[in-house]
Every structure is written in C-alpha cells, then in structure tokens.
Length: 261
Length: 261
Ligand SMILES: Nc1ncnc2c1ncn2[C@@H]1O[C@H](COP(=O)(O)OP(=O)(O)O)[C@@H](O)[C@H]1O
Ligand SMILES: Nc1ncnc2c1ncn2[C@@H]1O[C@H](COP(=O)(O)OP(=O)(O)O)[C@@H](O)[C@H]1O
Ligand SMILES: [Mg+2]
Ligand SMILES: [Mg+2]
Image (cartoon, rainbow over all chains, first blue to last red; front, top):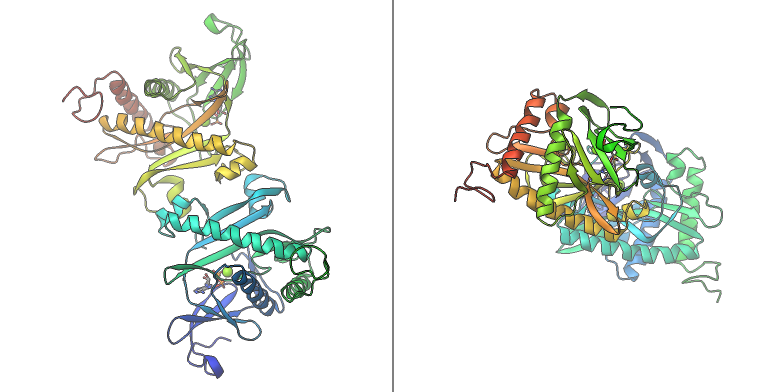
C-alpha cells in the first residue's frame, strides 16, 4: 500500500501523489485522474485523536461512490469516474478549493460548542458554513469575503458552492429519509476542472452525521470521536442502508424509491 | 465611584445598573437614560490581561463624545445625549444587540492570526464581521444566520448593522485621514430603542486601531496589548488630534474641515 509507483494491473505506472488523513491518491500518467485509496485510519479533532476503524476504507469508498452516483443522477457534477474494487475510486483530478463546505440541518458538534447552542435543534432553512482548509490554522470559519482575501476562492465561486451544497442537501435528505436516517450535517469539498466546479473528496460516515430516525442512535464518526463503541458496526449499518437505498430495496412506504406505495 | 445610588448633584437618585470591563452605567429614575462612567481599567484578550491606563476614562469618554457628535452630523443616529464632565457621558438607554460589529480596512490582529494573513494588507472593499458578544464563548465569529439562530438579532437587522457600520467607516475614514491617522479597524455596538437602531457603547483607542500615517506608529490599545510602552501618551495624542479635527484646527491641506485649500 505504500508504493511510490503502482506496478501491477490496470494502474501500473500511476504515481503516488498525496497522502491525507483518510486517503492516498495516485496520479495517472496523463495527470488528469487519480486513483483514490481509502484508508482505515481514523482521526478526529484535527488529528489530535487517532485510531483505526476496521474496513472503514472499503465502507467509505463504497458509500461515497453510491452517493456520488445518486447526486450525478440528480444533476450534481462530481469527480467520480468509476468504482474500481474495494476501497478504491477512480476520480477526475481537480484543483481542490481549500474550503470545507458544511451544511447543517440540526445543531450539534462544533456549532453547538462554538455558539453554546443546545444539541439537535432543527435549523431551517439549512445553514451553509465555510471553513478554510488549513490544519495549521485549525480550519477556521470564514466568510465568503475571507475566502477571497485568502485567495481560496473568488466570492462568486463561494456563492456557487453555497448553491451546490444546498442542492446536495436536498437530494441527500430525501434519500436518507427513506432509509430512516436523519441527515444531521455533512462536509463537502469541491474542486475546479476545465472551468467547472465538481463535487470532490468523499461523502461517508467520516464526513456526514447520521442519526437513526426515532432512536437518535449515531451511525457516524461521532461514535469514534466520543468513544461510544460499536464504531465498525455503525459504518457497516450505514453501508447496508445506503446499498439498499441505492438499489431500490428499501422496505419503506415513504419517499422516493420505495416500492411500497 | 462605587455607589449603588448616586446622591449628589444632577444625577442624584440614579441607580447603579451594570459594570463592564471599561465602563460603569447608572440608570435614570425613568429608566430611559444611562450615565456612563468610563474607567481607567484596561483589559485585553477577553480579560486575560489586565491593567490600568492613566486618564483613559477621561480620554475615551471625550473621544467617544466627539466622534458620536461627528457621526450624528453625518446622519448616523447614536445613543449620545450629552457630555457631562470628564469621563462621563449621558446616553439613551438601548437594548444592546449582543454582536460586536467589526469593520476592517487593513489586515491585523485576530484576522491575521485566525487566517494566517500578513499584517497591514489593505482590505478593499472594507470587511464587516460580526462577533457574538459572549465572554464565556470568547466572542466567536458568526454569520448573520448564526446571529438569527442565537436570537441575537434578526437577519434583516444584521443587514442594517452592516450598512450602518460601513456608513460609520466612511465618515471616520475621511475624518481621520485629515488627522494623518489611518483607521485600521474598529468595533461597534448597536442597540434598539423605539424600533430604531442606534450606535451605542464607545468609539475610542480601546475599540479602534489607529496607525499614524507615514510612520505606522500605533496610537491605540495595541500598545497595552503588546506591551509597547507609552500607552498613556498614545491615548493623549489621539485625544489631541481628535479635538483638533472636531474643532477644525487641523493643519492639513487634505480632506474635509481643513482650512488650507
Ligand atoms: N478529485 C480530486 N482531485 C484532487 N485532490 C482531491 C480530489 N478529491 C479529494 N482530493 C484531496 O485528496 C486529499 C486526501 O484526502 P484526505 O485523506 O481526506 O485528506 P485530509 O487529511 O485533508 O482530510 C485531500 O486534500 C482532498 O482534498
Ligand atoms: N446606551 C446603552 N444602553 C445600554 N447599555 C449600553 C449602552 N451603551 C453601552 N452599553 C453596554 O454597557 C456595558 C458596559 O460597557 P463595557 O464596560 O465596555 O462592557 P464590556 O465588558 O462588555 O466591554 C456593555 O455591555 C455595553 O454593551
Ligand atoms: Mg479528508
Ligand atoms: Mg466594552
């Protein structure tokens, strides 16, 4: 897994490009695509807490691929080109915009902490926040104007990111509702390619908060962050549900894709 | 200075209402006005650094009064009713909106720290930021939407605050330019009274950053924050200049009020 140049099979000759906290990227000889290998490494609180979650790479890669495909079907352009075996995704190379775009439907996490707000209060209309992607600065919250000052994105781009993020939220909320999952919040990354803006990175229990409808059971990385136990099980449970939703096997009378009405 | 009820002179019967880090407020019997007594106490970094700056109360009260009067002349409504002797201001009681409204013309301070931006870079157009006034939460940066969630202000009010803040910036920039002072940034507080929004609190070297044109010499609370020395002198120097500007005694050929052209 630590090769500098892949030597076997379809990706022979692809070169190691970048290793982040959750993924390792290999660049195509032409430089236009990346092979993304998802790791089982788990980090939280900007790398201060570290661990491993068994099979997380495989789960997150699969969930990301299914959700990106769903979004494409609903008109959102993503970097996904192809799912290529467990834990791997083939994507278009983009110039990542160094902003974490966060959409929130319920209060929790850093929002509640930063502002002293109670947990689990509905936010309607949904809130879109931008954080400057900088481990050194601890990902500070920024205004569109700050993003401009930082050279992270032009203000018009930020307006577009906001629209796209809300569009993604609409599609995902409808999808997860039929799976009896509350989409609490999530983080997106976007990138530029050929003058267009594509949804990039991943969409997984690492980057979304999922609460089971009714019970409120957490099915995401908060189990790891907060040492709640049954972390692997939660990831597997989310995979099972997303697979079911994506293939129309949802035993629900509500929402899209349910065969029951 | 620590009376619970003032007993002498014009304000006999006024009752102690609130003590903050920089001022003490006494309420009129009718509850519609406050006598504001400015203190010499200096704090920085949300109260973590403490000290005294000789005559600061008198200087800040006088500068605030002169600047509020200037702003009134330019159509900005403020809480100022009357200057009543050294270190005291008579103001309209308002319901303070718990947002610190910061206007920035140059990068420095928390902006540079938070975002890793170099100091002293021009920001054009000026940047308006909102911080939630909460010592417990360390005054976090907020979006207008956050202010709404917090019940601090309605989003339409925040839009109005932004307009007012930029209007204040325009008036003050022109005024300080003729005094050979660069208005780097400043913090405003606003309040509600009779359905209107008034500029409240203070405008002083405690709440503004002033850099001498040409030399860049700091003439504000940063001298205290950063232990630069000559703190009292800087406050006195700013008082001298603002007095001169307000009474048209500016030996300058530039800007408004200068008699030289
Ligand atoms: N399509 C893409 N093109 C280029 N870079 C990408 C693409 N998708 C994701 N990335 C980047 O890959 C890097 C590795 O991901 P990850 O391990 O999650 O990193 P991080 O530690 O920054 O969270 C991230 O910087 C991410 O922005
Ligand atoms: N016109 C006004 N009516 C009511 N409160 C006011 C008015 N002007 C200022 N205040 C409030 O007076 C308090 C005391 O001021 P200060 O000592 O600067 O407090 P702080 O420690 O919050 O900075 C502040 O909470 C400020 O918002
Ligand atoms: Mg990541
Ligand atoms: Mg104050």
